[in-house]
Image 1 (cartoon, protein in one colour):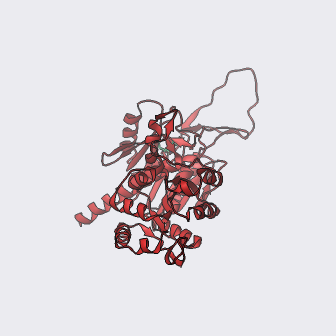
Image 2 (tube, protein in one colour; image 1 turned 90 degrees about the horizontal axis):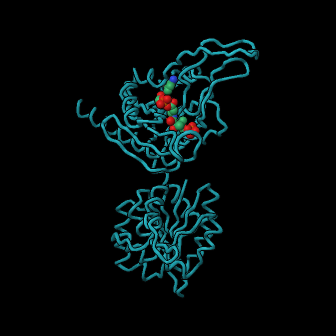
Image 3 (tube, helix red, strand yellow; image 1 turned 90 degrees about the vertical axis):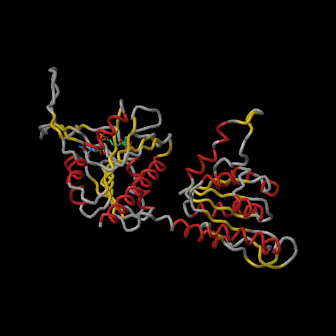
Length: 408
Ligand code: PMT
């Protein structure tokens, strides 16, 4: 999971360095964003060294004297990648800007651009904290769902005692976990995901397969589990580890995948078919290794069961997501598959595009929903693609439930 840690200008900024380490212990990837004020107290280099990531400091970073477009839109990219925005320490100034929607630097712009949960740990002089303006801003943010980790009481850097000291590290980390737990919109759902290739035996040592690594399906399984679902991952042969908390069923051939899916899908409310299932298999499998000779040879192939279509035929209330691996006429073919296979959502990828499809860590997809909504996404990590797919799943589920309720 990715946390963006906003560090603002206060004496407690140095404590944010320790916080980076603490968050990493809980397996978070931390992207640090520093305001101009923060850089008066601590250098970006410290955070870059600790986080292993470039620290973002400016909305319009200069490159050879000219503002570059890439940095100007970076806040959108960071916003899309962020699972949670944490600001620690947060000054009175940043609270006021967040509350009033002022976007005049990277952090304030990111706050507006992001839909991720926000946790804010203020630290400031006691009078500034108690001031009606600050308290009003804090209440406004709380009302909008921002989680405020109240400052501790104690001796402050300004020489007085009172509330204003940055809350303890454990209190901040606990708030982060709590905020993330709140993003569990698939809690109570059982989700079946297929992933990886299949292998169709020709003889005991040879098989037909494809280039699927399983990364796309595993990313979907992981994201669904993080969002609270019980996930059953029916996986063809891959070198990937099952994501934490996911129930994995290993299969080899299309036939085995079909059997496993039929057995498990009855208990699932959502089924997502990311596997690259062989469409054909050898009609006859040789029991012995085929011997080489100098003659040309051919292998007769027969179609495998279309797993997705067979499940979707009797889907009832179950929501069905298919993938379309295309090399041409992507939109046209994906729409045809959506209808022909009776799916609710088709995730189309042009597997010839750079950074998309088989074995890449990224993908470029367009989502075609049964209600006519198309969503073309730029290149992004397969984890981010997975989140978009699940957002669409949640949207389709809520629209079908609303329609069902109004029909009753
Ligand atoms: O695994 P990666 O390396 O990360 O690569 C990701 C991916 C390219 C495999 C993935 O993004 C993808 O496109 N998966 C679907 C591949 C595929 O088989 O597409 P298709 O257009 O041939 O099939 C359409 C749909 O029917 C798919 O959901 C497929 O799982 C399903 N199908 C196909 C044949 C079959 N016999 N049974 C099926 O269920």
